[in-house]
Image (cartoon, rainbow, N blue to C red; front, top):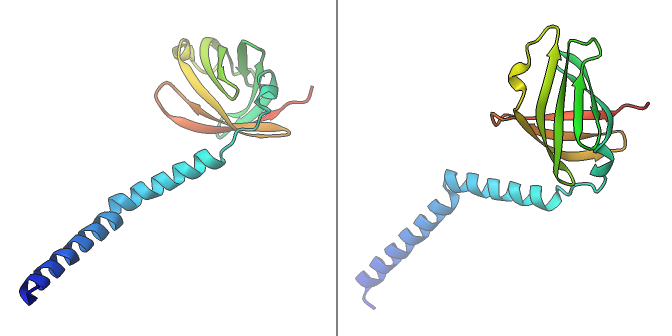
Length: 157
């Protein structure tokens, strides 16, 4: 092999390696690798506890920033949410789609301080993502696609 050919081939190989490293280490691929790794760990280690059943019915409470304490009462097919000071109450039907996921469809609302008639007929998609002895954490996605996490605690009767 002539020196000139070797140098051209060496330069081409060097460019190929540089292109490969650029593609591998480019910001887009770093982000994609991070997302892929994150998704792997989420799916590999985010094992739902098998005790979601104990949260299908019962009385729970949670606190929101600004509005205060809410009480949630749930039976096999319906959920009622109200505030202890009776500012409003909301009733919805529940359809469990898996052990830890359900769809809440708002059926009616009454209130003294808020007009909640606009939520009737809307749905929220709820997934229990973590359970403890005294409650659970769920992710709630509203009909607009907004996601929020909520921590609910069992109310002892």
